[in-house]
Image (cartoon, rainbow, N blue to C red; front, top):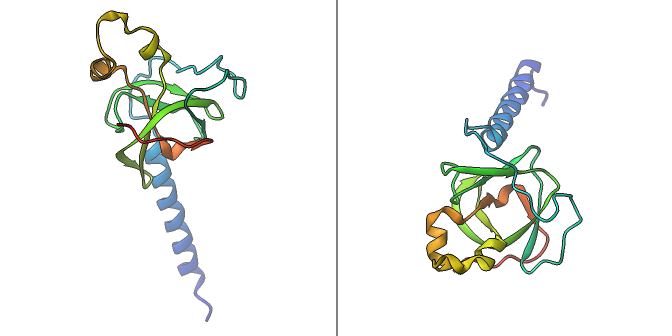
Length: 148
């Protein structure tokens, strides 16, 4: 049975609007002044040193915000550009982003190298040293373990 043209156009328009609203909410700029780009390795896609941790590739259409906690409401610490590779320390459940609750904590070599400040690694993390990205926009290229 053929449907009237108006019904088809209304359904197509509604689907398009819902699709754009859902995608726009995940990548829209929430007004945070992003202070800087997070550079991993030498900043060039595909040219990185040997990794100790899991690897992921940014698959977002625009810059992906790096957050202080696994939630979109937390402070933006910077951003990473599409196609850049990331060194991922672990994953954890957090706020859903386009239906995906997993967030990746980025590996920070300074956490291991600069422990001479008298603060243990877990305490350093409590003071905002962690960097998180939504797994919705990062394709893991190797297995990622859960955070302890």
